[in-house]
Image 1 (cartoon, rainbow, N blue to C red):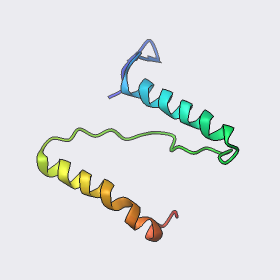
Image 2 (image 1 turned 120 degrees about the vertical axis):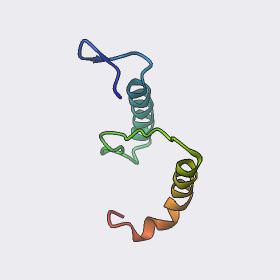
Image 3 (image 1 turned 180 degrees about the vertical axis):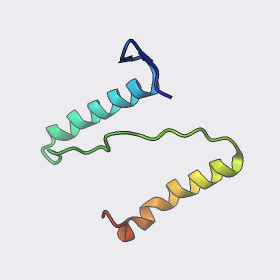
Length: 75
């Protein structure tokens, strides 16, 4: 859910916090001259974890995701 007032993101909403974080990291990365192109996905997906089973599934996905990088079609 986006928190928008008069067409502008609401201060301290998740969208504003993520945007500020991504902007700060992008500026720091560009100062190293390693990253000159876009380094983030244009959007993010938030999801409410509703029970322990969902939490465990997401936790396992995050933990195992780096192991699957070599077989990722976009790698």
